[in-house]
Image (tube, rainbow, N blue to C red):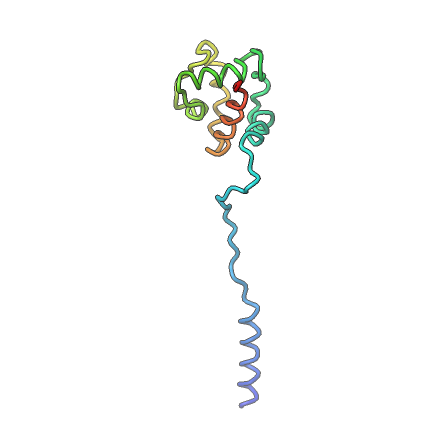
Length: 128
C-alpha cells in the first residue's frame, strides 16, 4: 500500500511539474524604442493606404500634394486623423471630397496609431 502511495505521489509531482502557465497572447501596447512614426506612415501611405495612387509629395495629381495637405492643415489647425476617420470636413480641396470619400473604407479600418503615423508622414513634408 505504501508503495502505491509513493508511486501516486511521484506521478502527481511529475504531472504538476509539466503544467504550463498560460502564455499571454495579447498584443502589447508598448512602443519599441526604434519606432519611427514617419517611416511607418510612409509605409502605410505607399502600401496599405493606397494613398500614393492619388497623392505625391510635392505635386498635385488627382489629389493635392502631401506638402499642400500638411501646410493647410497646420495653418488652419485642422485634424488630419479626424478627417481620415470621416469625422471632419475637408479643408484642402473640398471639390475633390467625393473622390476621397471612397477611400474612407480603407482609412476607417486603420488604427489610431496608423492614422497618427500617416499624419506624422504628412507633416514631415513641411519645409522647416
